[in-house]
Length: 266
Image (tube, rainbow, N blue to C red):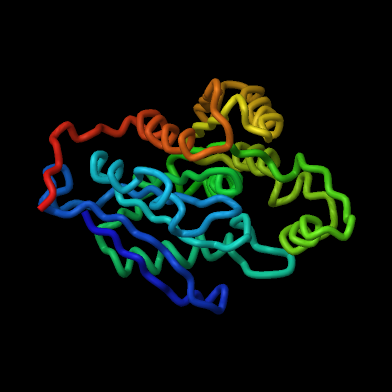
């Protein structure tokens, strides 16, 4: 198993950016010489590019399922092109994939081999990226993920309000490029393949109501065009034991097969 922490210069953002890359190695029986499927794994609002590595068993899961994992750091951007700040959506969807595929040629560029997942703000982020660019990802795994357009905004002078203005400005973001439900409807209207969506939230999550609104949107769509599946995990909160469990459930939703042979380290 290879774990690479790399720093790349982003022309889009004008600064160095940190990215962790997990790559199964050739000696492991399932990997061979072919291209690797890729999971783009997004951190939450208080995390960074190391969060999934430090707090979950994602490196072991990548080994067992034979999948490359890319975990980029994006600061407090919510993975959007900020109104007052960097163009993180453009970085994530255009620049970073091209840079990493050049650096690591075994990463598959095929849509059917690329999946995106994340927790909390990263759950919003993976839905934002996946619904806005359905041509890039075959499936989305959103954990503890609400829609920012469902959060009422008041400019009360707080840091929370200031941060929101940096991201989205002061106006209502409903029916804009940062409204997940709007993006979901537009993707259907535009035709083309849609990503499958797996969505999960803990029953004790303080933002369960926001997750339920996202669920209501998807289940109301005629014919379930996103192959939407929702899991309410009883007794779980907004915590890493829940997210670590859900990444495995997402792999199973994708139909990925777990390598049953034990890996013996040297």
